Amino acid sequence: MQVIYENYARSLATYLSAQLRAPVQMEVLSVEQLTYEEFIRSIPNPTILNIFSFYPLEGSAIMEINPNLGFAFLDRLLGGPGYAPPKIRALTEIEQTVIERIAQRMLDYLQEPWGSIIELEPSLERVETNPQFTQLVSPTEIMMIVSLETQMADVLGMVNICIPFLVLEPILEKLSVHYYYSSSSQKATQENIDSIRHKLENTRVPVKVILGTTTITVMDLLELNIGDVVQLDRSIKKDLEVVIGQRTKFLGKPGVLENRMSIQVSHIIEEGIEDE
Image 1 (cartoon, rainbow, N blue to C red):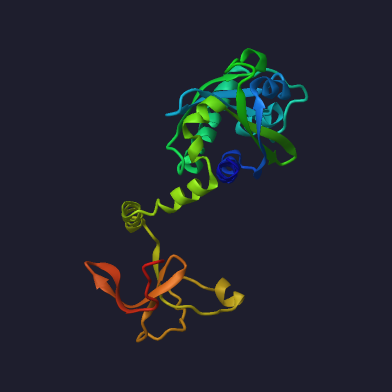
Image 2 (tube, one colour; image 1 turned 45 degrees about the horizontal axis):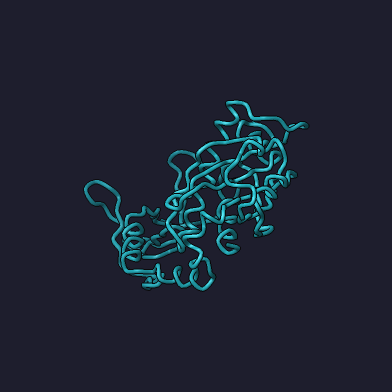
C-alpha cells in the first residue's frame, strides 16, 4: 500500500499543480489500520468526505479532504489566490459541484498505481460534510487509512483515503511488494510494445531546415529594409541541416517539388537505435 500510494501521490501532485496553477506537494505520511469509529473521531467537523465505489471490488471507500485544503482548492479553481476562509463552514451547492468534479479526477488517478494489482474504476457516489452522518460500515470495522500530507503555497492539510478491510479482502494475497513488482515487470508484452510503437509512429514532430546563420551589428539590423540582402555563412554548394525537434538529424539539398520548397535528404547524421 505504501508503494501504491507513493506513486499515486506523485501523479496526483502533478495533476493538481496543473489544474490549480500552483505548486502542490504531496507525500505519504502514514499507512495504518484503525477502526471506523477512530477514523471518524480523528477528522474535523465539518470536512469534505468523498464517498466512492471501488469497482469491481464490492463496497465503498472514503477520500477525506481536510477543509482548509479543500477550500483553498476551491478558492484557486474559482479565481482566488488559494486561501481558506477564516471560519470553516459547509459547502454551498456551487462549491459542492466543483468539488465533485475535481474529486472524480483525483479518483481517476488511482487506476494506474493500482493497475498491477487490479484494474479499478473508482467512481464518486456522493459528497458529505458531516462525519457523524456518514455511516459507511459498523464502528468496529477495521479500515486501512492512507494519509497524504498535501501542501499548496502556505496551506498545509491532509488527504485521507479510508478503505474498509472488507473491500480489500478479496485481493489481500496480491497486496505484497513481490507481487506488485513482478506484475509490473510482466506488463511489457508484445501487445503493449506494438501499441506504444503505433502511437509513436503517428506522433507529429516539428521539422525545420536551417538555411544558414550570420552575425551582424545592431546598427546593421536597425538599417535593414525591404530588398536588402543578408549574406549567410553557408556556401550554396553545402547541404542544409534538417532539424527534428531540437536535434540535427539529416543533411539535405534544397529544391522545388510541385511549386513548394522542399528538401532532399542526402545524409543521416545520427542513426537511431531500437531501444530509443
